[in-house]
Amino acid sequence: MAHTVLFVDDNPVILKTIALAFAGEDYNILYAGSGEQALTMISAEAPQVIVSDLRMSGMDGLEFLRRARRINSSFIGMIFTAYLEVDSIMGAVGDDAIWRYIVKPWQDSRELILAVRNAGQFYDALAAQRKARELFDRSERLSALGSLVAGISHQFNNINVGVFGYVQMSLANKALPAEVRDHLENVKLFTKRGSEIVKELAAFSDQSKQWGFTSVCLSETAMDALAVCAKALAADGVEVETRFAETCDAVINYGLVKQMIVNFITNAQHATLGRVPRKIMVETGRRDDHVYVKVIDNGCGIPDGYQKKIFDPFFTTKGAQAAPGSMQGKVSGVGLGLSLSQTVATAHNGEISVKSAIDEGSEFTFLLPAA
Ligand SMILES: Nc1ncnc2c1ncn2[C@@H]1O[C@H](COP(=O)(O)OP(=O)(O)OP(=O)(O)O)[C@@H](O)[C@H]1O
Ligand SMILES: [Mg+2]
Image (tube, rainbow, N blue to C red; front, side, top):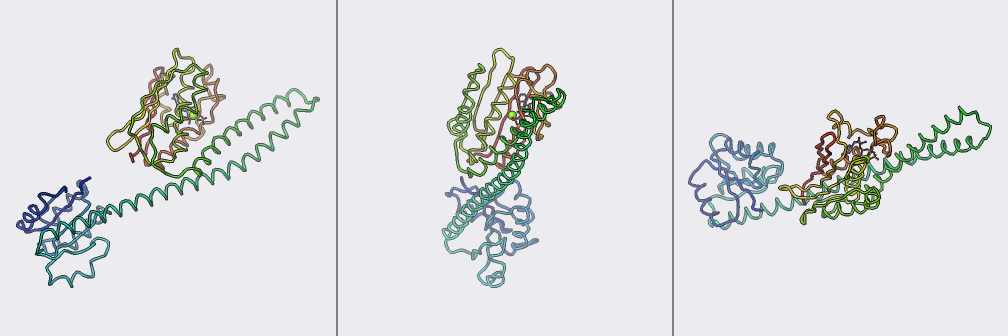
């Protein structure tokens, strides 16, 4: 993509010379006649390279570039200066806002073009470095979270297994009064729920530690997620339609995103219980510089008041938490799927959106930056 370069000079003749020099070059060139005017352009235009004259009426070039840095942290700044003034700005060159100077008047416009080209290359190198660093940080954070979750769920599991074992031993006692036996059976049910929580947390921590961030086709990830659910969907007689985009790459943690889609599909499967026919559609696509994966169902829908709550940890309307008489009582869930998915979405600089209408169905979309 062509770089955007902003030239700032209070001499219109210089700006015209620059326009002539860059006429045949592939840049998006912007001009400003003063530092004040240029500052108003920086947020909207986000130039990658800024070249400013040193001596200007009003704000001088050094002050302008330093103020510009407070608005935009990533541009490469250069300063035009007369040969005799080089000494006076040497101290400023190399600081946060000023990368290098260009001596004015330049003998040959190719010199200027080359300086701008180098600045563009430097910008790209820094941007790639920043991106790599950010991905590394994100994958480190997820992996640290995974380890924490693994540690807690391991301890919790030990407690749970201990309780379950003693309950089993107690239940083996034939002489137990009926009431105590009932209570113990309930304790067993609670430990079962504890095991389901551990299972879901362990899956999250396994994936977060196993996979780093890599460029992956979201359509393939969605296909793999669907393959995980295929047997259960077929057994339930759920009709599945797919619409996969061909070019749909994103930098993702494959394991965690796959798990997020599996949860969307499982939720859709549960939501369509009792419908005739039961339908799910899985779609991937590209929207400008973002890609998305979407799971649509013709299920029970989500009441308005619940659309935020469903992302709370342990919020579920399944199993024992289902409304009396609801089909959701027939399936089990611990209420961690969407809350973990939200964590995963944030780690990908993405977001999950929900559209839903009662008795018509729901649509869950994960939108994230394209690779
Ligand atoms: N497609 C959907 N249609 C209707 N309700 C949904 C849908 N997806 C999620 N929900 C609601 O959001 C709640 C939370 O979903 P979430 O995936 O976090 O947990 P869960 O499916 O109940 O349990 P699990 O931890 O096993 O995923 C569900 O219990 C359900 O009430
Ligand atoms: Mg779920």
